Amino acid sequence: MKANNPDWTAPRTNQDWRDDELMLAVAWLKSFVPRQEMEQRLDVAKTNLLAAQDRMRAGTMGPSYDSADTAAWYILQAETFATDRALWTPEGTMRVVPFLTRIGKELKLLLSVKGVEERAARMMLQERRQPDSSIFEMLVALAYRRRGWRRVEFVPETPGRGRTPDMHVSRTGSRWAAECKRPAFNLRREREVAGHAARATYPSTKPGAWRIRHC
Image (cartoon, rainbow, N blue to C red):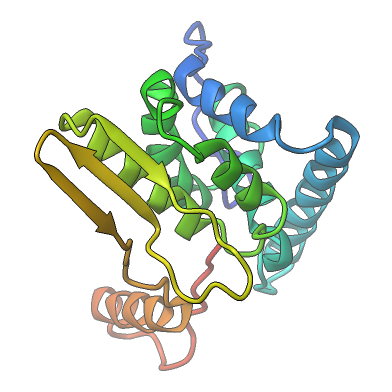
């Protein structure tokens, strides 16, 4: 193992691979942000990650990304996992790669959902702090289309209009309003669970000695 690198990954000699389906989703989401702005956001995400890795090697734990731009962190993790694996982290990729891979696999079908591009743009711009909800909603819309619902459309959010459903779905003889709900990501709870697991595995370790890293 390469010394002092907590995220060392075994080299894939003669196995240089590229996940084109994942990159299709990455390119689509990046297209909603002006190119220069997207590059700047990714540069900041890279700088934050490298600084966090330096702190970790020095024995200090801390966040790997700026939560004010989680969307850029997700794009960085997906892009690097799909291409060179140079800056990926296990915690980062598990939170985004499976979902963007599905979007990339079925992007053509997803684009048949009315309003999906507006929802993706909102995720990358106005809601960059919390992109998970938008990703979840797009996957729900895609699931409806895959299961034969002929018309799926997001409901635009209009200030002053009051609460509206996330989308309308319909097929012959049936029409529904759909509201997407998902369990919230609870970082504190995940740290507690991971800490209990670590202490159970290494019972001789003093309480408080384990510091759990999250992306």
